[in-house]
Amino acid sequence: MRIATWNINGVKARIDSLTRWLEESAPDIACLQEIKSQDETFPAEAIERLGYNIATHGQKGFNGVALLSKRPLEDVMRRLPGDDADEHSRYIEATVSTDTGAVRVASIYLPNGNPIDTEKYPYKLAWMDRLLIHAEGLLATDTPIVLAGDYNVIPLPDDARHPDRWTDDALFQPESRAKHRALVNLGYTDAQRAVDNSDGIYTFWDYQAGAWQKNNGIRIDHLMLSPQAADRLTGVTVEKQTRGWTKPSDHVPVVATLDL
Image 1 (cartoon, rainbow, N blue to C red):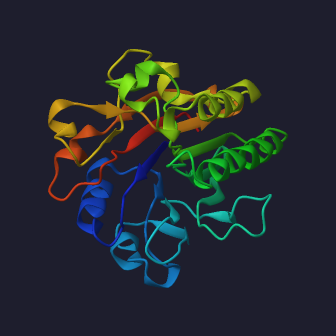
Image 2 (tube, rainbow, N blue to C red):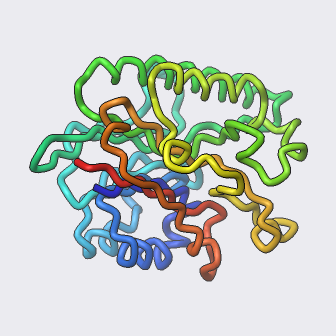
Image 3 (cartoon, rainbow, N blue to C red):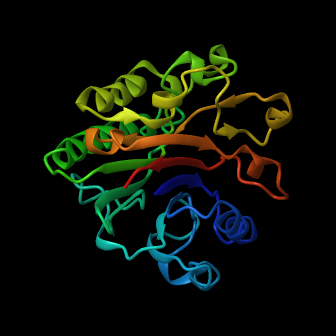
């Protein structure tokens, strides 16, 4: 089973790129972030024609997450627990059953947190605390868990072409990185680093200053696997070709293959 994560940066603006990618890469499950669409206006028909079931948790103009699956999406949960006052659409989770078992998959759009001297940074850290609590609870099940998405965290200096340029950014603050590390310490495996620990693996290139052309990238899109899922991991690909397409997202898909 191939499980992908992609911050699409506007599903309506990039529906042609999305459908092209779904046809060419054909993931079994795709976790989308920053769909920037309300549920009722999500362009479902073009995706359903390709054989995908859809679950969305959107809002108008920004944020928003979605799950696309070739198999039915069961027990869908929208919204990360822990703060009923949080109205941002940043989390959706569902179970997908296979002939030999099931996998529980979440699509995550973690807060950016910038500027760090505003309320946005404490919100990011509090959101990560909620994620840690929920992620720990998920480990109590025997079901393989995949927490996939745009984490807006650069875990290590090796995950940036120029780490010195990110020292004042919320994505690279010690607190943000420590909370991501706490997820690893719970027992979750960073799928990419489990199969390839080399430098120069990036998933995001800014639209500004020729970042793509200069390969000034960062790795912030992660698939975090529970022990049951990590045991089944057979490979990870970063599908960089999409960044060179017309009107691209500034992120690219990351696809993990699990023997499920």
